[in-house]
Length: 118
Image 1 (tube, rainbow, N blue to C red):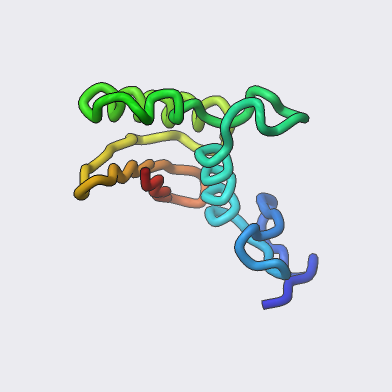
Image 2 (cartoon, rainbow, N blue to C red):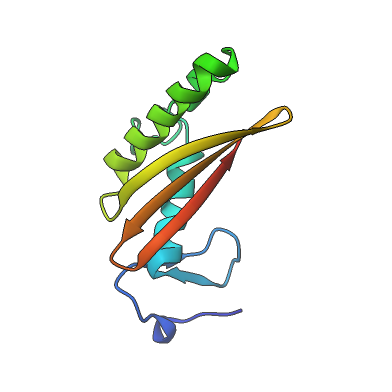
């Protein structure tokens, strides 16, 4: 889907990282920003060296130790870098060998959920 500036209806918008010619707006824009925060390791963005989350620091620890620490890292990073949301809760569930982290947030656009599979 091709987008132009004429299709912008929200003050919060950016280019989609999933679709080259598309825009994301409102809650989808916020969700994309949260995904970028969660998938960026600090030090990898030269213009913002502290940007991202340090959950990978805990990835090799035993699950009972790592999981709550990763929750804290996720919560702290989103609070720091995405001022348009209020993080309601960060939870996790273990599915086989994977841990799925769920971030529930609210903004002026309503509620949103982001999932981080590890």
